[in-house]
Image (cartoon, rainbow, N blue to C red; front, top):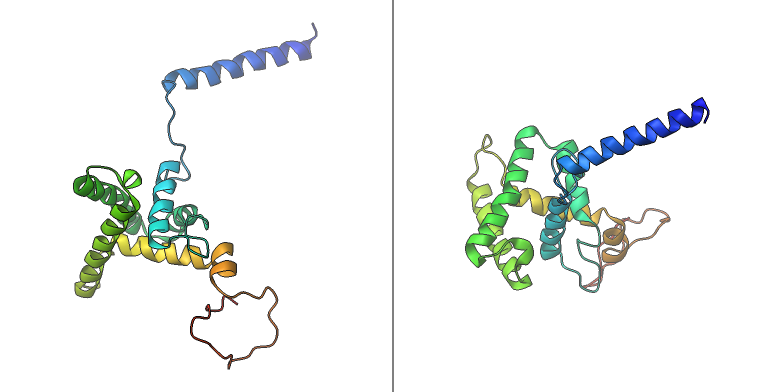
Length: 188
């Protein structure tokens, strides 16, 4: 055995020891991997389902197809203040707790009808809160969820190309396009 082979084998042994120790310390139980500093994959799945309840799939794809959960993780992590991040993450827990209190199950386990009922009540709550909110009051977490769902969906490929009218390379600007009742809005 030459020196190069010996170093390679020692590296393999040490690498296996480090990986094995991590596996041993973590207790061999699967954990939801972190997406970023604030969210796990379980949070993304929850946000996708909340988004899908707000914007369900019909003749066009829903919020889940647009992966709004992933979009929300980036927006909250990168664009929200620390206070709004806390409100948002606590809001996800509060939403799950409200579902558990109302239906005896977490949001992801609830039926589509129960999900819609809960989100309708939360929407009414946030509208009342927003109407009476002072400028220094914190934002309501459900309003943030709803706004990010809409923004994420309509700026995504499925939202812009399938839910809205889309021309990849538009021609000249025409500010007087005729609109017929029932036409989709323009994405471009």
